[in-house]
Amino acid sequence: MKEVETAIVGAGVSGLAAAAFLGPRADVAIFERDDEIGGYCKTVKRDGFVWDYSGHFFHFKHPWVEQWLRERMEGQSIRTVKKRSFISFANRWVDFPFQKNIHQLPQPDFIECLYDLYFAQTSPKPPHNFKAMLSQRFGQGICDKFLIPYNEKLYATDLSLLDVEAMGRFFPHARFDEIVRNMREAADDSYNATFTYPAEGAAAYVAAIASRVRPETIRLGEAVSRIDLKNRVLHTTLGDAFRFNRLISSAPLPATLAAAGVATESVWSSNQVLVFNLGFDRKGPSDVHWLYVPDRRRCFYRVGFYDNIFDTPRMSLYVEIGMPAGSAPDLVAAKREVLAGLAAEGIVKDHRLVAEHSVMMNPAYVHITAPSIEAVARARKLLERSGVFPIGRYGGWTYCSIEDNILEAKALVDRLTGGEPVQRND
Image 1: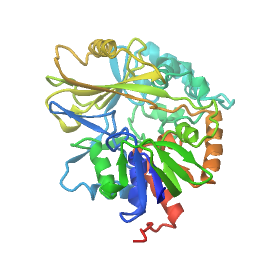
Image 2 (image 1 turned 180 degrees about the horizontal axis):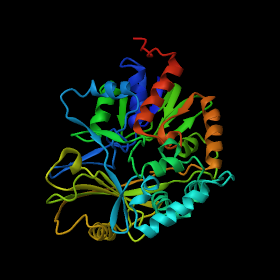
Image 3 (image 1 turned 180 degrees about the vertical axis):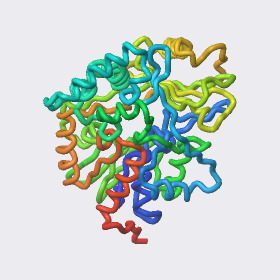
Image 4 (image 1 turned 60 degrees about the vertical axis):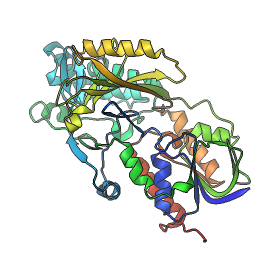
């Protein structure tokens, strides 16, 4: 039986940030089932292209977080970019967010959206789920043309199952007066109007965090198989056992509960996202970073353009397909459908595909429902009594940014240590 002050499950952003804020001399052990750190924040380099597992563009609301990272990235090229994002609709690209730019639609669609929006805004009835919220705040026109098909493609579920605040601050709300004002005075005041991105990919930010963690504390290829809450002991897939004083887990919350022998509730659901990273022989559309695709004839819901961040001469894309959890797609057929969809959208013309990579992220977006919110609260209370603290997007079963993960890790460490790093006795 080994002993450790703080056990950390997962060497993604949340787990590494918790270890980093505990300090380089903290008595920690980090258990990571994969053979490399980063979680979903990994970078792939192939044939001159730099891709992430998906589009991890960073949006910093807190300057100290960005400064803390950059101080550990000396000499690296990091670009701050004003976001250019669009929605593909009726053979044109409409500025994002859709609901603030309906004046860019063909006239019949614009009139329908404006009419429905005006009368929807007068409804006094409070919405009771995410789908009802969309309809009551924006009217059926905007919902039918973008908000419902796009989000159904993303979440791969019935939107009426999701909580009203399933996307929290990340959903671009807009009042009627803001929408009308935007017809004359265009403004993108969304949370991610600008973003930063390193030339070495998102993994460069992970490496910056990891630079504050002693490498020998990270146990790669070793997952946690069982957690004894009563005795505060964890068992690993390599047959080791560790007695801990506290455990910070960024593993998906249902998995943590199952490892702890807690009966899981039937409230946990999520989607999975298949990501194709594609490199072509020459440039494609310029001055665009995201393209949202609500058209149900296309299998993908979003396309990201890496090449337009650093003005590289070859088109470099990531393409995301939302699927129900547990789906097992035919990758060859899926890639063929993706390429056909990109051609139909006018993104790929006579381009030649010269490099590719794909990855399935499961879970990807968790389904935040009224029952799951209550279940998370119950689970946190139960686990914390035994010194187990869930953290991060999947540990907390929530919707958040990478910066939020770092902030949550810092707040938890401050709470556990009184703001002072935990030091090793030796």
